[in-house]
Amino acid sequence: MNSKIKKATFEEIAEDLNSLDTDTVLVVVDSRVWQHYGESFQKEPLNLLNLKNKKVHLYKTLEGETTKTLLEFEKGLEFFLEKGIHRQCHLVAIGGGATSDFAGYLASSLLRGISWSVIPTTLLAMVDASIGGKTGLNSKHGKNLIGSYHMPVNVWINEAFLETLPPEELASGRGEVIKYGFLSQEISDLFKKKAKLSQVIEACARKKEEIVAKDFRERGERVSLNLGHTFGHALEKIYDLPHGTSVFWGMALIFKLWGNSDHLELLRDFEKGIGADFGNPPWLNKTFPVDKIIEYVEKDKKVRNNGIVDLVTIKDVGTFEKVPTSIEKVEEVLEKNKDDLRTFNF
Image (cartoon, rainbow, N blue to C red; front, side, top):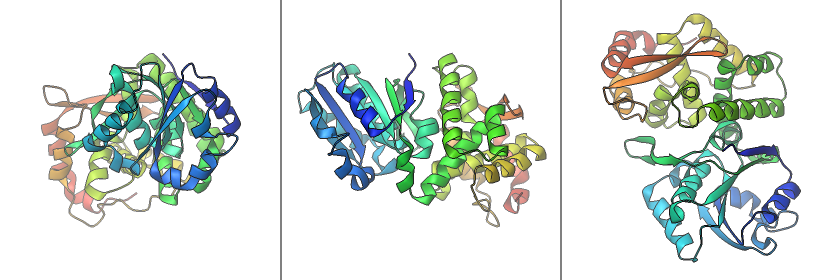
């Protein structure tokens, strides 16, 4: 099943919510988003807490990735179960990628699965995280190691939310957007033309939807969406970086060690084309953290039972390449290049 993805005003979202085939709506909203928009959400036209002929139960999550824990997950489950919900309830997630990950996993688990929809409020969520049905939590061993596939019914994109998005979150979203430039010639051309962000968002959402429709369970083309993520997830933990920023530097590492200088040059070109500035690598002039990176790569959910991880790089724009590599080989390559990487910039 594909999600219905559409740009929507508050009026249009309210109309769709009121027409849902249920008498009970469960709302899961990021607490920081509620601080900015809670008052607006309780007035016309959206009026979330007063939908027509529907009970509404509101749960405010912790901010961002801090909500993706088993403890918070249990609190969310018990909160809604206490309300006496039923299987025809519909859950609506409002927030960034972490909120949709968390709320989607709640929806997949409550009463063994209820339907859900998303109102993404960050750039990263609009182009990637809210689309595709991957839901989940983090573990102390790594990101998104607990979860399920559970496709949302609707994804309502309202770009007005970006007006209050903190600069670091907007930059993070651009890091994920850049990934799509390598996966699609159309999106690459938009970067070159310095197209409006609204055009880029729509093109990225369409590209993700197209890939997911072909390969929901990530057994083929969907693996291309992991470009930059294997090392990116490790860098995110090690340096406490925003997700999209980590993906950018994950791509830089992949292109440096498993790609070529043309890819690195294009990475910086895309960065300029999308109006981002990621500066210098977080490891620049520091000891390159081979051991820590390997620790996280070993626990990556994409590692096979024979210790092989599928690294993703590109041949050309629009053509990805899967490079099955043993953990031992990854460590060998990083060790061999760690002195060069310490001063590597491009």
